[in-house]
Length: 334
Image (cartoon, rainbow, N blue to C red; front, top):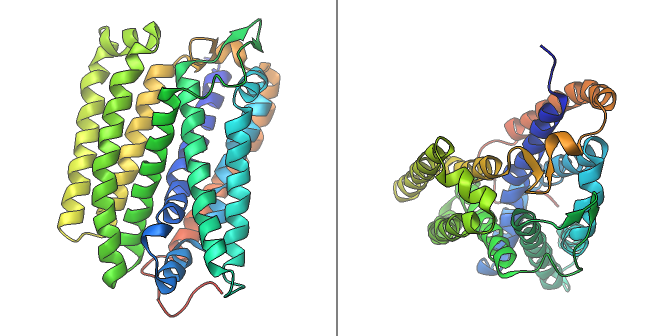
């Protein structure tokens, strides 16, 4: 039985995107929460908690973007022009955030400036990721395999709501990460913000979930036509389970459980997107098969991916294992 290479590659890219969201999401969330922790000492502990892993987490973004260009060149050529502005702003935010992360340790006079830069870079990056997601969900105007929309098509009420959802979601991941990695007053404050952002995120998930089926008849039929409509019961039940685990962990002073539950909310939401999209890679415009490169190219690239991805997973897992446990308030990145 021949391997369906386009579907395999779609799965790999989806995995890379999900890995980026769940891994880089919490360290972006730490930056988003900076204004709510005014103490310089607390901010140092917060950045020390992500210092060993934050730049490595972005490996998955490079893998997803590079893989998309090589494997689905039509998608890259049509989606990128539609999302130039949010993608450029996202990348600028990531760059400025990285610079601020390093420079905040090198100065006293300008410390507040670089802390503000770290917050702005993190927030802009998260918001633009959500904007891009919302623009993709609502559809991109493609004619003859070329982008045929306008410059501002990406900016709509729906994309703004999805942008806000990602910011709040990342803040939840950041708060649960700090609950896992810190102690004392900082941990208690992080736990309180995790509860607030958790409630807000669940509300926004509900809004987006109820809004999405009415954007396109494809989504409506996918969620409300049997047998696919079974997912309309399964996905909400899984989200409710994650929400219950989050609430239980935060109210019972659990450390790891709230973080895993918050990640679960993202994974289930991502699965819901996959259910809505499949078999499209650009919703309602291009299917996976239509957008894929020739099988010979896909097979050649798959050989490299089968070597590279396990290596990335291994060194990522090792880094998290080495730096497991609570952050020492008196030691860290300098």
